[in-house]
Length: 194
Image 1 (cartoon, helix red, strand yellow):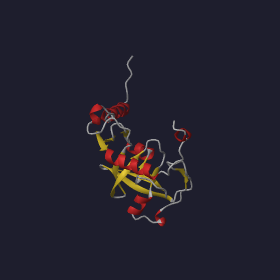
Image 2 (spheres, rainbow, N blue to C red):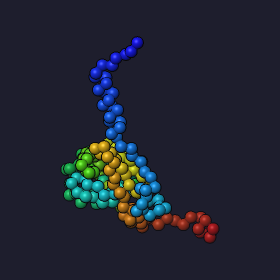
Image 3 (cartoon, rainbow, N blue to C red):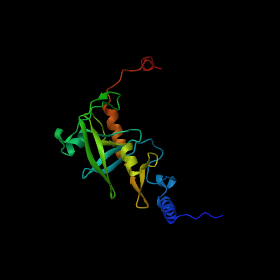
Image 4 (cartoon, rainbow, N blue to C red):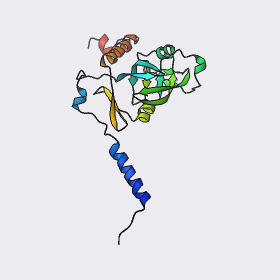
């Protein structure tokens, strides 16, 4: 006994199969390391088009749940307090200090022909970065990132697009962050010459 499928079931199945086949595989190989300084432990720092402007020193942070905007970008975009909406949840800075946000603002991030609206939490805290893009943006665009390969990849119209990190800028940001740290008390082992 054979089972006949209805034409709509066949079309749905074929449509789903075509979509699965059309989605490119996102991954990294040793070829993706070409042009990077290896070995390294650099953060992934990129340039993105945010709010209609090319913004440098953007940190890609897969561990963060919110996009954060720092004073340099806030001022550079000529934003004013009245442009912000309320955001009442404190954040923890890189130094472990609690930071009260000034507010939040929704801005577009353009990557290629894709535009994703993102809620940035605006903070008054020092950072060598202009902003941090996090899981909400990464997931909305379907991004897979690799600090090792210094790039991120995302699917667009059946193809794999790439954004390449700026290792030199990542290293400059790290030096800036380290030079701003307050000098710590010498440890006991240092005092004793150990």
